[in-house]
Image (cartoon, rainbow, N blue to C red; front, side, top):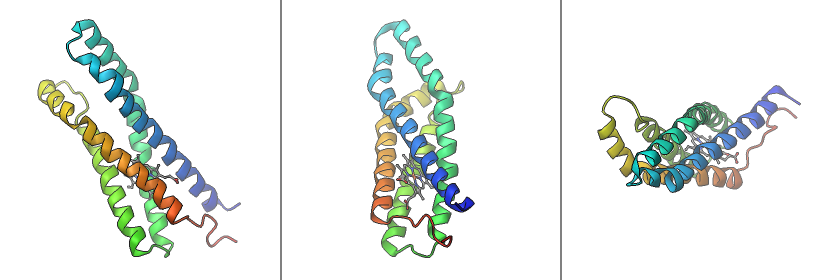
Length: 156
Ligand code: HEM
């Protein structure tokens, strides 16, 4: 098998696994961890903060992998010359939704300075981030179903 064929498979698997880690962690945070922060006393707040810290490395790694593999996949798909107008339009919506979700999540991550203001903003934007991430996920799956890539293109 050609190196390029293997690279495409690896990129797609990496992108899909990172997407599950990123979205799954976000959903678990919104449904199970964030409610602990509201009016359940200092102990619950501490548990919530520790849970977030425990997942931080994973979400940072997933973000880096999503962007890295996503950009590579995007150039690969756009350069194979088979991208129709519909494909490019859907891909553009997907990349904007995914990029915005990752950027928003990154910019509301807890930091020492301005914690209160950030926390308030993060509170309002959690579901927005998840909805944007879900749009990117669903469009990613739709794109690969509607426009299946020819993984062996040029190597037969
Ligand atoms: C929250 C962020 C994101 C999520 C949850 C996500 C999720 C997904 C999923 C589930 C797929 C389908 C994988 C497959 O079946 O092969 C996919 C495909 C793809 N994603 Fe993402 N993605 C995100 C961000 C991005 C970003 C930032 C880019 C580009 C810079 C990107 C570019 C792509 C491309 C080019 C494909 C292949 C589409 C095709 O098959 O033609 N994604 N994405």
